[in-house]
Length: 215
Length: 215
DNA sequence: GGGTGAACATGAAAAGTTCTCATATACTAG
DNA sequence: CTAGTATATGAGAACTTTTCATGTTCACCC
Image (cartoon, rainbow over all chains, first blue to last red; front, side, top):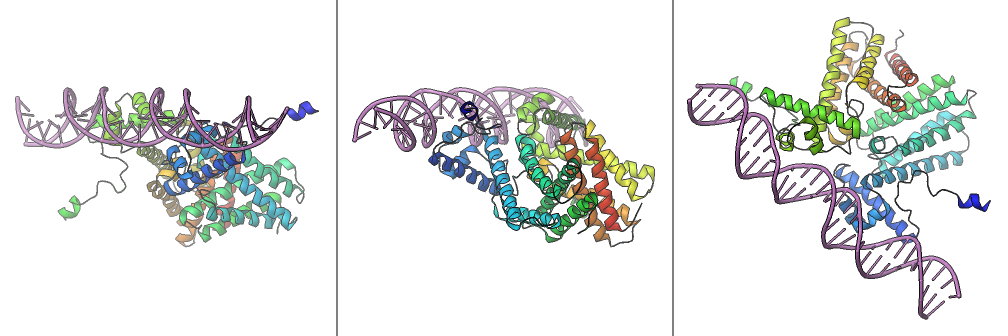
């Protein structure tokens, strides 16, 4: 038993070169991610520089490389953090409100997504399913599946359909929602209302058709 | 009048530092784009290097900078070329087949998109509405509108609705199709059939609902 | 409360990229 | 055939990424 305990792997797809152990370094890593987020917002991904990140975070470049293998990993970690926050917020709201109809769940989730777009630095540029992951990460793809899986479980309780069918439909819905909300934010920095509304309409329409339910 | 003629701007949003005038240089520029496409397919956008592009294209780095202001511009130009080819193919098929029902037009367009994904180097990584444009280009967004506008004209002849409503719906449909087909190609390099089919289903379903028609 | 080893911090410099520019050659018009 | 422009080139200047040897801080133990 103790063997099994001891055998727990630190992290499957570790983006970090070394996991921060002490609190001070954990804090530093957070600072670096914050700096990255801010810089991505300000300058865009291409103009991002390890030196800049370090300077903004108030640390030496070397410290950055103490934990991250390379520049990509920094952005990857930021992406992961954004995803975590999103999933966390979704879970919180779902458990908080108790089991509602999935119809409302869609609204809740999209609202959280909108909220994060508007308030979390770097979220609009770097989140699950966005630019960088597609290019750099493959681990995140599994993370994306986390969302889909959570939702699938939830819906499975309300809809009598094979789970795989549900997962498929939710995967599609997830992708559509992401694309349309991104479009909404491209049209207008704070998210064009008309496009947001249409995103909700499309997603609900699709799911209703696939789940064979009405509200 | 001659003034007006002479005043024609070389190119509004010129991604090129200098337009190739002689044929030999035009060919060289094409070679550079070909090289970029191949390298992006092989190594990904991040590992792309101006030196690599030049070497692969069989030219000196300086030649690259003779025409492109920077690395981004190269990818931007590649994106533009991909877009042009796509629009060209779409127009060809549409005029070739004559005015069909928009239902079939959707199929045609998605099929062309699939075809290009499978045969044009770099298309899956860099095309209108993809990775790089979102980050680097804003001009391309207008190009994207070209597609939407073409389709809007086409549909306007068949559906009696305000043009702006049509344009909006087609913008949405375009975005959804792009997202879902990208998903299909992420699932499987040659495009997962199940996801491709669902993409068509979703797009048609949405448009039918918005256009208030059935097949 | 002092010792010890691991974790952490640092920044100069090695390695690698981007981009420039002075120089040389190819075209094109006349 | 000649001037003038377009194009080609690659060494190197400027800037980034990444390494690493060196010095500090922390956690734990006696």
